[in-house]
Image 1: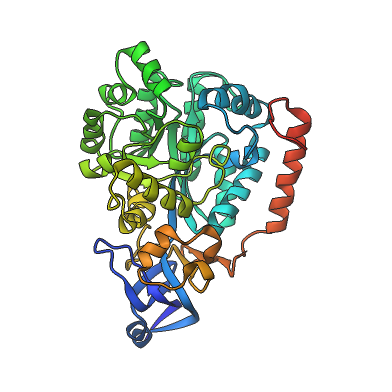
Image 2 (image 1 turned 30 degrees about the vertical axis):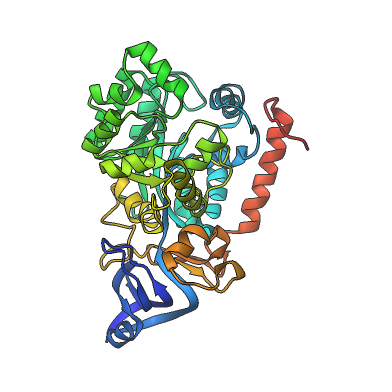
Length: 446
């Protein structure tokens, strides 16, 4: 009998492998933070002796979800400026609030709240674009979550830098501090073509290539952006970035709401990962990305929540459900974006888009033990005929019971084990009072 740390059993195990198989009455063996084996429970129990057994009846065990685009510190701006267009939202509300409050303490405290929310919603890995990345990385590491932490690049001053060179220096420092970490992947994150000129985009690309880290960018999010970039450069945002050699498989492009068919072909040929943020796009009336066309062209489309200031939550389960339904209606075809495709987008494809396909995203021997247990014995989840259907259309964040990251249980029976939930929530309330007292941009009542 081989010694392992855990054997976890469930009614259903979804490895999320290429075959999208289902193991009924399955189990996973975990040793040294990695998956040792996946298979029927009897087979696993016959091969392995575990230090701890976890039996999860009336449950499904699957890889942790991957959130491929967010801005975690923006949880502290949740609901602060709703029901307005993106440009007004950014320029009149979000950017002034960030100018007033951003710093290590703000971003670190907010990142703890975001990680708490995501873990309890079954997200074990996220891809971020923001500032004060060291504080975000420390908070993420402390809470035991996997994060791709992007250092934001802009062409104008903010609390994080005075000019583009400052932001690039911040990014290089972040890379040097965190490259090689077991949970944190540093990333270079130029904001968008309308906030970073082609020269800045090129410098960001060269920095990412020199250190072999991901690139993360907003791209073709709104009709205004497309028109603005056409006016400035005579090209669309996707055409512009392609013309300067920016697009490649190391790039995660958030939104991509307004690509032409020719631009979809560019994204596919360059192997760009697309983070589809449907709930944020709907709420800001940015439009609906042509996901069915992108998938048909071979684009690796994944799910992002965007920040909680524009969504207003960080649930990938919610993104899956909304996207799968909306795209059926848009296409007039109920077979579009089926439940199995949605689950692949939320797990394995998300990890692959972040360059982490060999690390996480599926339950396969040798990969990190990043797993979630979802309870199925709830009124809205019975009777059950198709487990993929349930996960895409019926399961909510609140149905996640247990979360493991890198072989460490971080949430058990919906309780965070790595930090004090009450303290995290209390700090959020304290920051709310500071923001209300010191800001004139909040559209909220006390």
